[in-house]
Length: 135
Image (cartoon, rainbow, N blue to C red; front, side):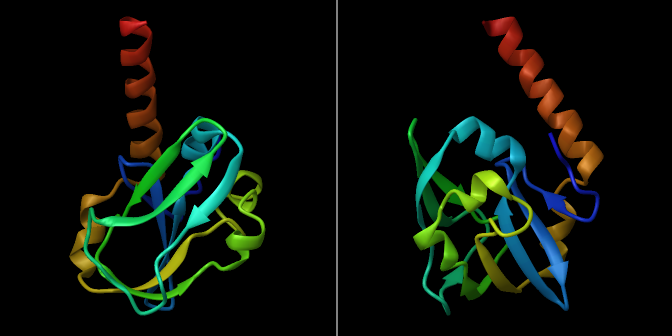
């Protein structure tokens, strides 16, 4: 799995990339693999105000429908409308063309509560170890 070092990660499997004072948000490679083939993406309208941990949107796959929680608070500047035509971009390129939204950041301090790539990878390893113990 891929964990780009320039991103912030949430324990809910979203990522945040800072670009020119804005935040681009998507789901991680781990999340898209767990979901399977994504067939539909529902994203917020441009201009929507989203609070941290609120529902940012939902992704429907062949396995399930998963709600995506916002890793930070802010106003949606742009939702990735390419996903309406081709939601498989999330599976094919979760850290690139499969991004979900670009947001104005309300509180930059919220980024401090997110994980770096090494911390996120360690979190996943601990999560997988717990699954093995239970399974």
